[in-house]
Image (cartoon, rainbow, N blue to C red):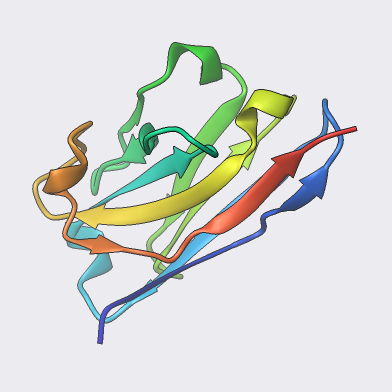
Length: 123
């Protein structure tokens, strides 16, 4: 059974940091790219970042560059999203997803999805 389980979300103040985790099971992790997406209230889900099976990362939102860093640990079948200098506009549900065809901005290219973790940035 394929599972992607996000964790690490929460309520933080502006300027804080969080590290999200995406723990996976049920598929051959090292063959898949893993992407992070987010959906803010009233908005469409958008791509945040992705890391390929060869450890190459891609950032999809220019506003996030330099603040968010994606990484993967193949020994733990887990991908991380380190989020620094958080802003209120980063408030969203964050999802991870797995793609056999590599990193894509098109969400339809991802075969497996997690349930999401809420990140709220507020003072």
